[in-house]
Image (cartoon, rainbow, N blue to C red; front, side, top):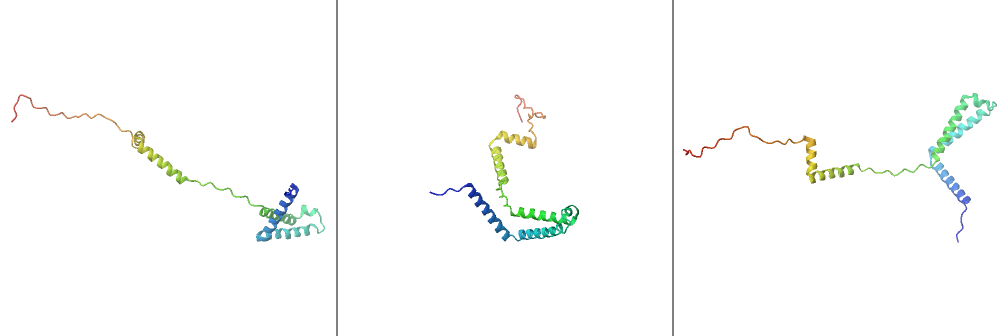
Amino acid sequence: MGRKHSSKETSKAAWAEEGDRQLRRLLEDEQLRSTLLGAYTTARSAYGRLSNGEGPKALLEDRGLQQELLQVAGAVREATEALKEPEPEKPRRRRHRGRSLLLLLAAVTLALVLSEDLRSKVLDMMFGAEEEFDYTSTTVPPTPAPAGVPGD
């Protein structure tokens, strides 16, 4: 039977794997190495200014030291962000607007072809309602010749 791993062993293995991944990233990423090297040199310079005999008083009074410490903090933050695993991108939902528009157009066309009522409503909306009227002639019809009179 297989040996069960304790949660402590699992967490140690995960921690070692994460360290291995970060070390590989450090070896492969030139920009990350230069960021960490810059942070290290700036931190050494800041430490030299701090230990020149003034002690903690220099933290409050020395503007150059304060700027160096801010640079160190920024570089360390940048390196930390670079070491973090990037968030996996969410798969984008494709939008089929063209397909939906074509389907809608086909449905409307089919409805217009098959329904005479709908077709007449659409035509009435576009061109105005048809006026229905009764035709009455304003001319007088010719009177028929009398029945008793012989024709020429």
